Length: 267
Image (cartoon, rainbow, N blue to C red):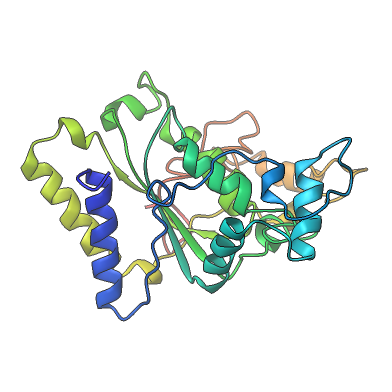
């Protein structure tokens, strides 16, 4: 929506990054009428198995043969060229809006964005940075470990680890704008200025940390689970390894919201 706060945040990012000399490309999914549903229409030409349609297999084959629909191909080209991808959105139902979920479903096809050999720290996009910038409809207090909505680190794990880190992206700390709709105009102005200030040094930031592939037994026999020696090493630690690999311990504070400091601890 052109008059929305998310649009203002997008415009600020375009202005600041362009001013630094970067070429900025915007995909306004609503303005583009981008299709959210992953269907057979994403494939040009014949299906390999029309009697038992399997979206992942068929789109991987279509990507290999250059037969994905034009809207998917256009977004994949943008991704290939990008050094940094900022996803700007309002948080809907603890996740992204349907159109952005559809972008993930349709654009990040197998083969293009991942393979069994190229996931997580070995991922396809390991040389690219990605960032979630989003607004919430609730104040920060509600997303605390003792808040009614629960720890925001848990909310972010599926998006930042399950999508971005899975595809290899270096995930920068999220930019969260807490409940702007209920904030005075002066506070929203401060939010915008804080975003502009961060954009000035964004590409120099350290990314969030995730458990590297080397810590796991990457075989079907081993179940792709943490190696026994890694679990043994973690026994003496006060916190879990990550939000997802908590090992029954308290979640590491700020695991999905703050990058580690130079000493290895989170700020």
